[in-house]
Length: 57
Image (cartoon, rainbow, N blue to C red):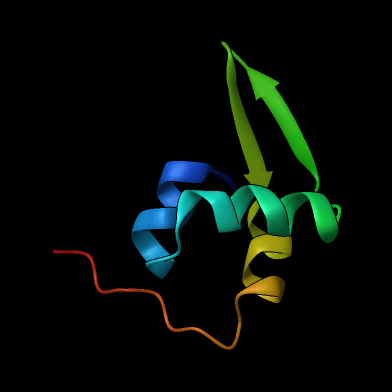
């Protein structure tokens, strides 16, 4: 599964700047489609595992 930066921001309550920084520092797998960047879910979960995702409301 692939996530956008806004998905990550919403689910992990992480500022968007932190998402981009983590993606760069941890070399998350990414792909671009239609002008949007998507990050590989496994890389995101690994990096943010100490944080709990927010419940979907």
